[in-house]
Image (tube, rainbow, N blue to C red; front, side, top):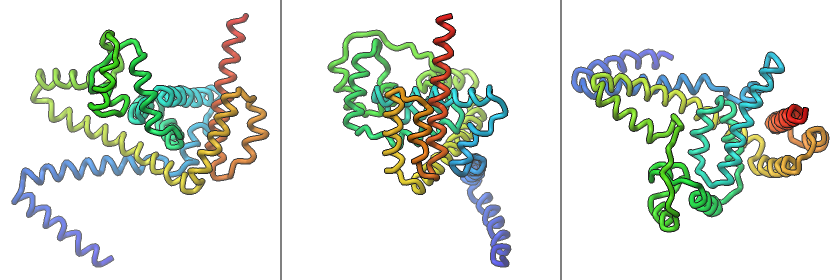
Amino acid sequence: MTEVNKQEPLIRQARRKLAELFPDDYSVYEKWEQYKEIYASAYRSAPNNMDKIIEYWIDTISPYDHGVHHSELVFPLNVLNNTIATGYGKQHLYDIVRIIAPPQSYAIIYLLWQCNSISNDERLKRAKKDFLERGYTDEDADIIRDYDINLETLQEWRHDEPERPLSHRMFGANPTINAGASQYLKKNFPDKADSYETISKGINLYVQAYHDALEHVVDQWFLVCSKEYVQKKLLELNGLFQNQTSPEKIRSEFLPDIKASAYNVFKLLIDTYTEEKDYQADNKNISTN
């Protein structure tokens, strides 16, 4: 303990001296130290185990909140299924889910994507098919990012591409749109650009750190549960979902066999499946009355 106390004044002395000798570099150092604290703060504030992530769906104060929280997982699950079907890249999936869903839902989507058994070759086949069949084209940068391909692959796809209109993207988080807006703002408010960038980068860093922490929780959970075991059971569960198996049957015949460390995650998926089936049944009843 004494050694640590002796070191503290030395560090402060070193910083003062370096600030005198390298003032420009030291200002960068100070900003980076602040960014590091932003990252650490976000990382520490995230749930630090899987049970705390699952609490988002368990600790609801009313049936309404319970339904809302499960609906916040349904749409990301649909995005996940669409991503797998169309061959979009994982970053495209992650970016959308981070925008439309709470972080806890992102953690579940990250978990499920890690268990995706589709090979990259198969994904690229699906991606090319989706690209050629959709009714619009897009900027190179957007296609490369969305499908997680390189320029050479895109150029090969372009040879088979039919003539079609350019996409008019209305998605506010689209990087191309954001880049255009940033260019305009920097041109018209040049003296404010640095301040904006400081805060913008800080926000992005905070969000990234929070999601990094959630990914770490999932990765650690895989070590406890065995990723191979989770993949196997997810395939079984997905088969039950595809066959429209009743939730009661899944709970009575499938869920009891799940090991304790993985139980809450599988229960969450089954509960969400149940909520969605109930919602569809209610809508059907309304439409027939």
